[in-house]
Image (tube, rainbow, N blue to C red; front, side, top):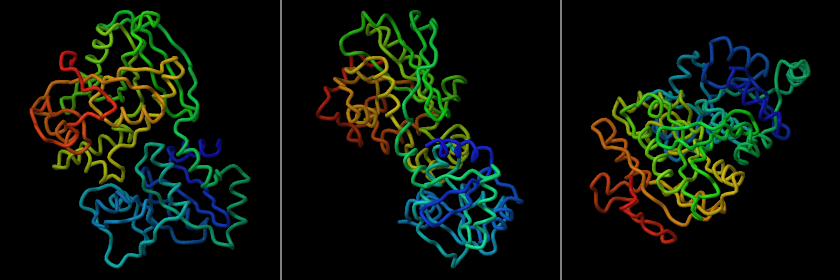
Length: 385
């Protein structure tokens, strides 16, 4: 899957790639970062008009419900780059009346999956290569000016998770909440993301059911103390709770904004300022309500030799994902931040639409997500932090 991994970086650099499926081939470029010269160059090389390819989530956000995973939009004449970016992620955008829509096939789906993995907006400009331009396109590939990748290879990359993680480096890092701590860094196979296991205490003295927390990175909350979320407090309280329980591991996962990346998270913040909640804002940009892949955590725990855990979380999806991966989650403990005027709406959205176990914190009864899964004991209020 080396070509697919290379394609990630070309797309992030604003370059076009060639994506193939059986007897069809398309020149593909990300709408994010597009300038006005690129569409004309793509169409001249491929010998066909460009289509805008959007996700089903984005189509629903602009009023086209029930769309496929990827949809090709034939726009004639093709708008300029600024207008294409508006169609790709701006709130209030609409498609022209009578525009032709076509459910995308494997190549269109693969293109959007690859953009999502690259943490770019899932919107692509695509031109099918005409028969009389196959020679010119082949020459561009042979010269190294255009990277060619098979759509099936892209799908295998995107569906395989992070690939085998490599354990890269580690060092003792004393923390205010847990002085005896060690950071172990893991790198994904494609080189895009790095994750850190914070090993707290002496593993030889850990409880049989190792206290573990999965914490997705949040630059705004963890580092700058943003009041929009409770992430920074959860991070520090998570470290303190693991230390108090006799030691264990906090997995700090590079999954900013529930997996959409910092750039898209900031776009979503702008939409939240216009009145949308966090889920609707993500879907306006073209993403699902949660793009994270917790198989990463499973691999890190395997590498650390941990099979039985006490999970510190309010998120039922984390419990389910680790159980599905074969980790024995023997129980869970709640881990709360503070409710403030600035984060209350965000927390309520997590409880009501993500199903997080936050009803006690928010003093709400009968809300979705209140029930613990039957396979786990109820969270112990005495150990809530």
